[in-house]
Structure formats: C-alpha cells, structure tokens
Image (tube, rainbow, N blue to C red; front, side, top):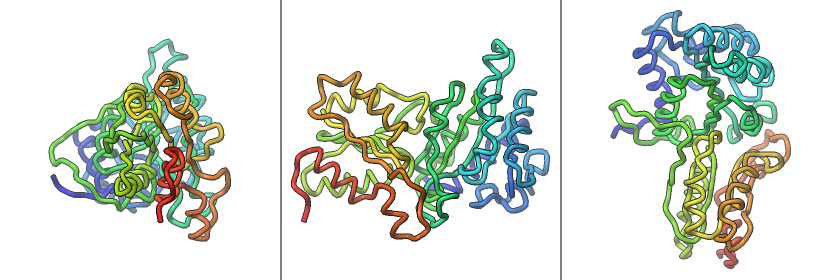
Length: 329
C-alpha cells in the first residue's frame, strides 16, 4: 500500500468525497486558497471551485451556523474549526442546534455535518492552542465524537463521518499531521463506533486515544523487552463507544490502564474505566488505572509542555507499577 502522511490522508478523503457527492463542501478559515492550516486541502480549490471550498472570515460562530443551516437543507458540510480551543465560540450552533434538530423535528430534519478540528499539545502552541477538549462533546446527546490516530484511520473514519446523517465532532491531533502510514489506493470506509486492537497482548490492556496511541504502542514495545505483553486498544470513536472490544480484552488480561492526553477529572477516561469495572469486575485483578494529562494549561516551554502529558516512559512506568514489576534500569 502507498505510504502517506496523516494530512495527505485527510486530503484524499476530501477529494474522494467531493468527487462522489457534489453536496459535500468544506467551509472554514483559510481552507481554500491557503489549503488549510496544515495543507490538508491544498489544491482542492483549483479542482472543485468555490462551490465546494469556502473561505470564511475569522468567525467560528458564523461558519458553524452556515454549516448547520446548509446541513438542514440537505447538503453535507465539513466545518473546519482552526484549533479546538476556538470551538467554544461556536458551541451554541453545535450543542443547541446541530445536536438537537433531529430530535426536535421528530426525525424530519437530518443534520449530516462534520465539525472538524485539531487539538492537543506537542507543537509549542501554548495554552490557548493546545487543549484536549474532547470530553465536552462526549457529554452531548446527538453528537458522534471521533479521534483517529493513524493515516489509515483518519481517512476511513472521515469518509464515514461525511456520509453519516448525524453531526460528527471529528477531532484530529495536530502532532499527528506529519506521521506516515500505509493507506490503500482503493476506496475503503471504517465504520464509526468500532474500536481497533492496535497490538495484541496477554498481561495488560492499555486503552489509549489519539496521539497517546502512538505513545502506548512505543511503551508496549519497550515493555515487551522486559517480558511484559501489553494489548493496545484504540477506541477511534469515543462516542458511541465500542464497549465489547474493551470488555473482551480486559476479560483476557485482567488488568487495564486508560491513557488520555485530556485530564482525568470529569473525562472520557472515567467512562472507559466505568465500562470496564461494570462488565469485567470478576476478571479484574486490580482496579483500572487512569494515566492522563495534568489538569493545567499547557505551557509554552517545550520541556514543561511534555511534562504535562503522558509520555512513553511514564506510560511504561505506570504499567510496571500496575503489574507490580520493578522499574527498568
């Protein structure tokens, strides 16, 4: 299979879906002439024109509102919010309109809209451009919440999100944009709500999200050298959550750790932990461990920034502690 970057996989999904369906369009700040912040829509304005690529003023509330109205009228907008930190400005449109219209209309109005944004630390963007706010959206009835971790997943999930008749919050990690991976040349879709076992193991289940999947896999490889076998699961869709994949894994390993960049307090990590405790209580050897980002604003300094989120070494250390194994030397 061809090897492409995370950003290029997004561009391929855009191009394929815009070609397939002329009702699909991308709207946002700098998505047309500039090709988006990370160049994931570069070249598409020249191919599809301003009917399907729409540059907007700097007003997240306005462009989200345009997207909601267009979706209600039968189009399939992809609303690009440049950094998840700015999505708070569009929360009324997302939470009080997009997420509720299908229910309030007794099913007569569909809202096929994707709110696509980037979150997370790792690129020295400081506290107002580095937050992990996915926990907000898992709590909103009517919203699907997606967080891909690989080029293969981001393309397949984005295509499925665009075709879905429900509003989807599609959250990418900005530090993944230049990661490379194999992506098929032929068309494929990944169903929303389906987790993926990224690595099989026997001793410990690690449930990780977004960029933390990359860290968890590296930690698992490190622990394998010490004779510790870790199974790494990427939920891919935070809601609806594929509970069965989590349950099956923990019933096999008997131990579980949930790793997120977002803080543990009031977050999705608690939901995942509760699912495991409720369904695997008899199989658990110890309570589920949560290993999450600090409850703090993200500093600008590079060393402090990385101290605020889980790392390969901290994940490995937490796993050893949960297993009762001595620290590696």
